[in-house]
Length: 134
Image (cartoon, rainbow, N blue to C red; front, side, top):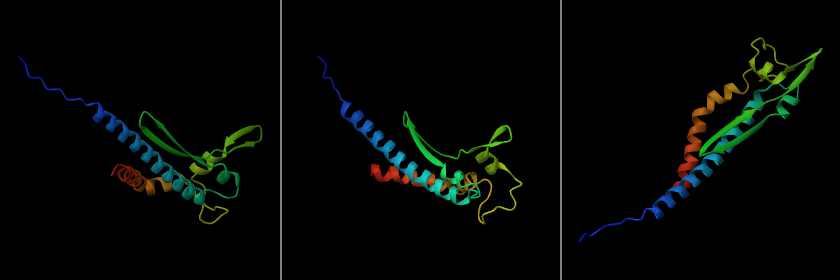
């Protein structure tokens, strides 16, 4: 004769799955807030001489298998002579940008605010997850 013991983990695993869904949802919300902030900050620094650069910027948040990613994009392609060039890339990367037409604008208009705020963005996303789960 054997006295057996069983333990049903279905309720526990369902709870863990629900917590994961809530964590992903909160991470997406936090990522949206962070990317909106990065977009705003980078637009303030982006060259204004060619207004479409600021107007065509956008942010995007995606999630796949629990991994949440955010990005800010700039995309302006211009024709010059018989060719085309990526104006957004050129203005972001050019080091000869010494006399901007609009004070306060600069190259690396996306990279600089990202590097200055990346730790805060991570903290804000983590705080959004904690708030949702506690």
